[in-house]
Image 1: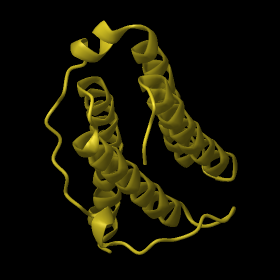
Image 2: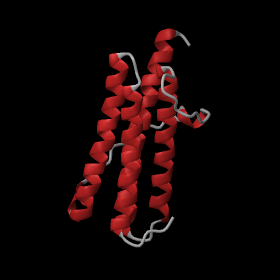
Image 3: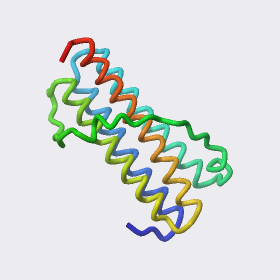
Image 4: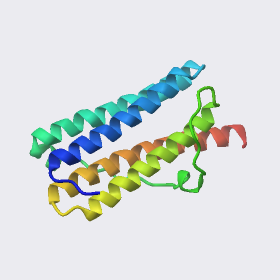
Length: 153
């Protein structure tokens, strides 16, 4: 994947964030339990925050430098899951598995792009996005593991 400018990078990343927000919002709309709806809607809002952050980065290069990376443990639960396709009405934990897998793929994509970027700003933007997606992946994996522990599955 090649980009001609930072603006191209930002457009690409914004489209990915919009796709993710749409997925979470659609899954939330199709969920029956309010608590599950809320979790999915919260993730949609997180993806929308990423879009806003990307727009700020494209206009304010200082924002990139001010981003604070946090150490996130990747328990790699999603790494061992099979791909699934979302269908309305599927159970919540299948939706969680799909979401974990999506976040894993986004994380790996942004990490690969960060490593291959020629410009420091591009590498920084992709590293930030990778970090943000890893946060989501880790959060979903912890929720999933908590459910497994609580139910004995």
